[in-house]
Length: 158
Image (cartoon, rainbow, N blue to C red; front, side, top):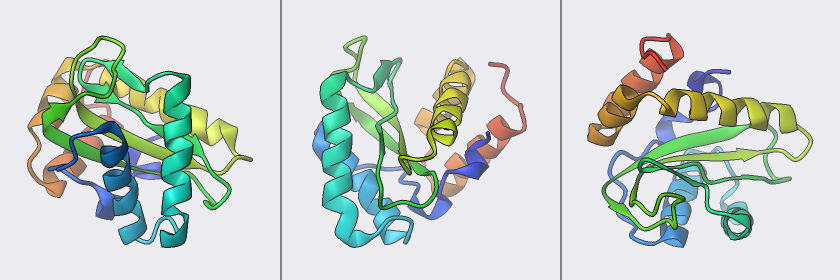
């Protein structure tokens, strides 16, 4: 699975403003609602589901990266987006560091394979220090999109 299979370009946020865990999840999920990828009336329910998942253990996986995700019955297919916080924020990350890169995933409950493949792709790409460094420096949607395309084309050596 590639980023192009699930990342909604119209919902990419290269300059997140939120400074708390719940607010950043709401900001990124809200971008998916604005892009028409999730129903506006489901936004609160989706944010609650992601926060419930966070209670099980932070999806802040370390090295400035978090992958908040959930399964939700309101979506028909896997959808996701990317957000960049240049300041970084406390996400209760496993390594205690501030998080700058957010990959949000929402998938239908009956498609666990897609969900796992997307998580695997994200974690594989994020092992590449160069990819992460460039993504943290991205200033525009175009910058982020180009990096995701390069990752999809195996231009980083993870």
